[in-house]
Amino acid sequence: MIDTSALVAALVSDHEHHELARPRLAEITRVPAIVLAETFSQLRRTFGQPADLSARLLASWWEQSERVLPTTAAALSVVLSRAGELELGGNVHDALIAQVCRENRLGLLTADGRQHRLALALGVDSTYLLAAT
Image (tube, rainbow, N blue to C red; front, side, top):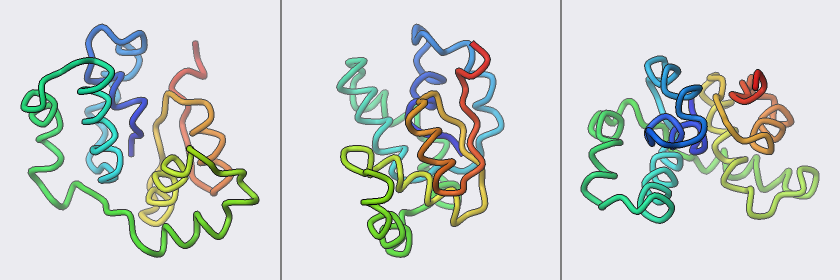
């Protein structure tokens, strides 16, 4: 799976990490719903893309419901029960993404070092896209 940082980098051609992320996009078949929502938000807010274009960029996932993984109540329960141990705050969304990966026995591709460390702490096989740079 892919998180918001890597998906945005893959979709935005002038993103500083586009060349690292774009080739990996072909291997992504399923995406957490929360990642699609966060990516849509980033495309709109950070990159100033129109809503219809932002939605179209994500259509290959949201138009096929089997490609979108929900955040379950069980995932929320696990994450919040470990909130103190993991020192969660604004990164609670990152923990939910990682837990969705864990529930679905999928690894995570990320361009965010903090997300990578959190995923590893939750027992997820995480690949840090920028580790080689």
